[in-house]
Image (cartoon, rainbow, N blue to C red; front, side):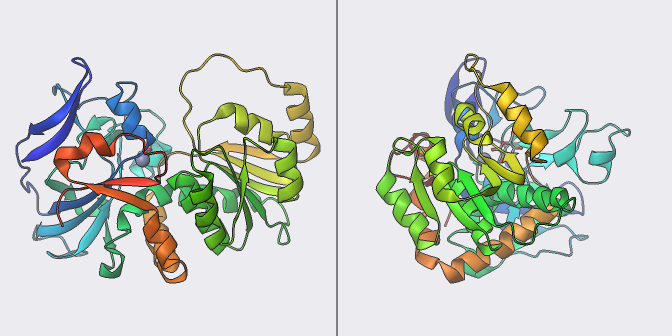
Length: 361
Ligand code: BGC
Ligand code: ZN
């Protein structure tokens, strides 16, 4: 079968012929891949800055944001049947008995670093025709979400962040605290803004974007306010947004993030989800940041990957988005490319939001 593979040692990316996987245990299912979304992580992998092939393989099949259809289910599979639509999680547990996180199915909190990630780290991904997977890593998606379900995985990044936010804020009475700022207007930022809206926040999105008009109209449609970073300093942004209770960072632009950190309100939480490249050092006023954090009881946390229940919440939220903002949600998928044109899908389109490789229809 065809697959999009990256060869880090040879610095090559191409469509290869890869052996079709077969079910090897009763608890597995075989899927036909329909859609695979591409994100910044994939772009880093095809630029050879990130990503590791499985042990013994020269190449890694990329792709971790997927939607597939079950074509065959092992005898012990009970949650899904042929014809069902499913989204697969990304991370698989490390093998160490002492890792309590992985042993409890919380590999998103793996202690050892020996986890694998499909399409990213030592485990082939989904940008191919068929995939076999254990039932416990599959999440059933309603047919009605066929067109947009490839957005489930990027939305899980926000869902895990929200889970962390609720857990952290149990420390403080904050019912009336409702102002959220999202940094970045890419797919993870926009989907996060939608989730924060549904959760009742006033949402402002602060972003440097190559296409302000499009981002502005998407965010207006969901009732969020767009603030352009080129024309507004972080001080201006903080004045417009109001007293900030939550920042959801979704760009990996660390200088902007640390700039915004100075403007958090009392008892605020700042969640980092972007992974910056290794640029040079950037000066920051550490005294100011530390002083504010202590005197205002603030929390900064990092969040990566997502647990199974975040996939469930993402599927639920996506259903709500699809009812409330059907056009806007569909417009987040800018273009669909056939597998042969996966390399075009990996290019950044300045006016686009999410590119998708449509492997099958
Ligand atoms: C994926 C996560 C993954 C992270 C780090 C992100 O793009 O959505 O599942 O944990 O990259 O590899
Ligand atoms: Zn991704």
